[in-house]
Amino acid sequence: MEQLLAVCILGLAFSSAALMLAVPLLFHSPTGGFEWMFAAGAAGAVGVFAVSISVLRKRSF
Image (cartoon, rainbow, N blue to C red; front, side, top):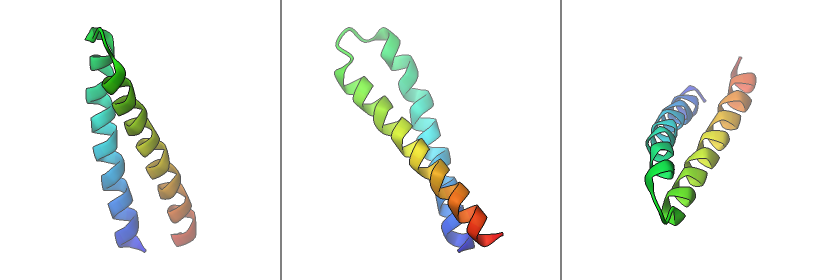
């Protein structure tokens, strides 16, 4: 259980980093289609990992 929680925290860190890299691309791109999809996917991943971490933390402690 602790290993799964650690993997979720690591996934949250990587998806947050991807989201931080994607946000500046949204302001400088004339097309913006891929950048919006990438930012939405990264934001969705952050949400999924955050919910997973809070659920696993409540179960383990």
